[in-house]
Length: 207
Image (tube, rainbow, N blue to C red):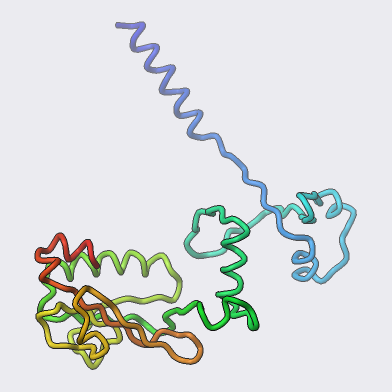
């Protein structure tokens, strides 16, 4: 029994010690950005912090302070994806992607109105999902309103009043977006076909 107690005590000490180890993260930034931010010549001490990775010249940043906000894990994207992303996001003209694909985004708060055909359970689950997304994106607020006039995002079923005339002939679940000349989304409507998605679980999965 004493051996077991001693072994447990040693393991506990090891775990506590290991948990207290601080792993320092080294932060670098492009040298040209560093010079632009600091607006002063490099010192001899600064030159010792410079390193080269590929074609990039980087400088180590001591006493780095993480900016406020939500950290997003980096996900590798290949050059093909990045090439199309740049053309789409920055709307490069005279290119094969021009006029075919543009990045659109919400500028105003998203104010959601539900039709009577959407159950309370699905409303609650959808709003929980939407608020979780909103909490992770700066300046994006998502909330429910009880008036169609106050909304810019409508979710309704095929049995409800036809809130979006552009979808009146749709036989399947569908959506319709409006946006302005600056590619800012101004309105969205989602119509759920309740004949195909006939219970809460199916509607939730479709949403």
